[in-house]
Length: 354
Image (cartoon, rainbow, N blue to C red):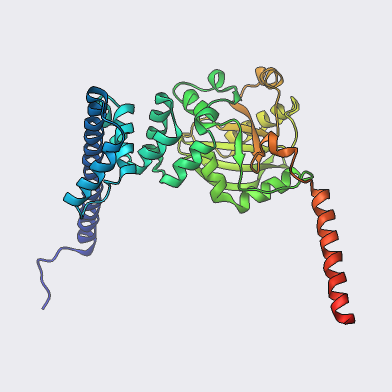
């Protein structure tokens, strides 16, 4: 006998979905509340240590003693190592106002804050990285990578036509969307690599590429075809962004040339005419070159009617100048390998002869 009072399956599923979402939301809030309390506790401990050292002249050895005593009193609680107590003191010194701690810094995990204390010394930049971490959900490893790549300095530095061709606030958002330069440390391409080589490599490593582009990008396709008046044109890379707009990236392995902007202007117009939905924002074009002359780029964009930006890319990790003079060239390495191979063959032949 069935229970006539049991709701229909669709109604029950709807209820279950709502309850699941509320439970997940409560879990997130609980975790956030725990983290805020922990960060606030660490800030209070750090402030007490800092005040005693400043007002009563306590030396650094007091931290070692505090660490031992706190660990003895609270053996089941981690986080009272001398190293972490020093971070607490530095945290309190960096954020003297308790209200600041209760807002942005308390919304990220403690060890994210430790990374920022070690790596970012300018307060405004530290706050910016905190906001980006909250917005994008960066792990500690991703945060470290973004700091190492100097993401703050690379934001909004490209030459663009956004302010003249896009309404506010989209123009400001689009300007912050584009970096200069883009770091493709995850790629290893030879000096003779062409645009298609770079394109294939980026598509093969699309996850790393999307991470470097930033939050909000969705990959649509490479060599994306557009037909205009019976003739086919192909876009190097096409993306869609959460700003609700298409983003075209045209790859170049040479320095920026003025004619690149005219081609991109056409591409953006074609995407607006063929792919853009009525509710979409205007399409954005990014010309990504090996290098650029800022004056040339600015003059090339002056006559353009579409929102276009010119930026640069760097492939592989830069080698410090002081190391370049002592590092062997490819030719030298090849000679060393040939010599080593010849010696190995001689030794092998000698063993056979005996």
